[in-house]
Image 1 (cartoon, helix red, strand yellow):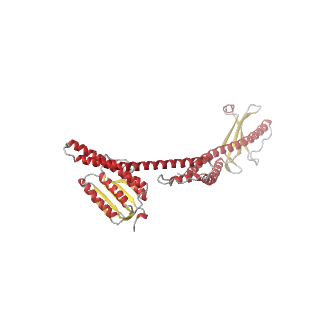
Image 2 (tube, helix red, strand yellow):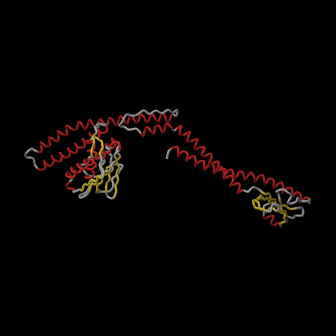
Image 3 (tube, one colour):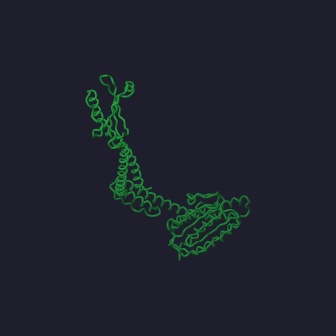
Length: 430
């Protein structure tokens, strides 16, 4: 979720809670104020009636054109002792003049005259319909909430978008940043000190990472070049040594093991050199490549090399596919994928290649379960104990794909490892 949306969502929830609390408090304050004013009126009216009754004067008519009404009832001393001398109630009363029932505020008080007779006076006055008041307050709170919410969201969207513009600039800059290219300038036109500090830190970090990456690439390239000659010399001397007469079988076996180890190191060294060349874009030349012919040619080579596994290699080429690409990199790309399909296969397994007008799918039977897609393209990652593997094959494939903006995906389905590469339209020769 975007930062702007998250802020608006949190504000909306906070406003909803605030208005709910405010509406509840407001309702009870209004009711308390209304009750307080009504109770004062009832107390004054009851005092007037009691005064008239104790003085023996004529009491006011019950239906006197006002909203007030009363009942005076003689009660026992026990009733007077068991009930409070004054209490307020909310109840519905029937208004004879209007012939309808309305909510009312009721005041009851008990008093006695000079002859020790006890009376209960009930004074009533119609009051507001509290249910209607609740609904009115609720409806107005909802309307106010909606209006304020839209107003706040619009204001926030305008203000935050304006003030967060430097953040969006930095995010866009990071999305387009790559250590393989020169670090682009990061210009932040903002008076906010935190954004200026953040942009400065990002720029310094990017330049430092680019410098470290360049130094690492140079080191790998130079080291690999320097290793080529001593490795070739060591392999040549081992071949000469193996031809020496008088060597025992254990000695010859040790020489062959050493030679195999050096050959593995030599393959690793050549792969590192190739990776460095790809990252430095040292393969600018392109040519038209018939993918169908290339894959069939590679399959023949691998069938000979892995003939002991008796793997069935099939190519389904309903559509011819020709692409423009560096010839060496094309052979490396498809060769590593097919080699990976052979080396991680089982005896009497199969390798299935499907060529369409814009993609190539290479599938092979699996010896184990699915590979981890987060790690298989990392350098020196090995998913098996194959000693001949350098752990750079799929990393080399990914580097070539990035160079040409080819999309590569991995999927494990129905006991098959499936690699699919989608060729961009710019590479396809029509």
